[in-house]
Length: 220
Image (cartoon, rainbow, N blue to C red):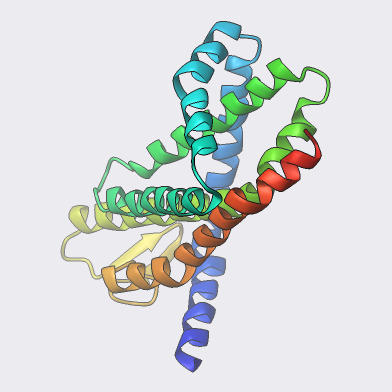
């Protein structure tokens, strides 16, 4: 129990002192992307219609045919796989591929807001919040957290290639000793995903499968 407590305290210190600037930058970039995709698709009925036919309707049909328990498991595995993939591609140096995950998620959210604006012109944003906030309030931050970790991991890997003999790295103005508590090695990333990412993704999936439909039904 003490080791678990120390792990969470250590990761909180790491997040607050080292990861927070990058996390906030990722949040601002994500918000900007969502707004951009929303403005690009708002009023474009052809694009929205194609998205509904190609993506949204098949997913709604799939959801309507499955039980809440199955949807809970499906959503959890999908989101956990996405978070894991974000970290895996973060191991590829130089290219900063976790940004691709960020762009994909922002595009989906921006198009969904544009879809609500098309269907419900008067109060589309409050309706969107009602349908998405219950689970998104957990799901989006954990996705942004995974992207931030992936970008930091990519940055560290890139630095090591460029400076092979150097045992210290400068990460956002901070000196990071390789092998220290600020180094994102495999055992540490495994603990982060098992003890931080997985429980939060699990909670978000439970809310999306069981709670969100009830709340949406009240405002239908």
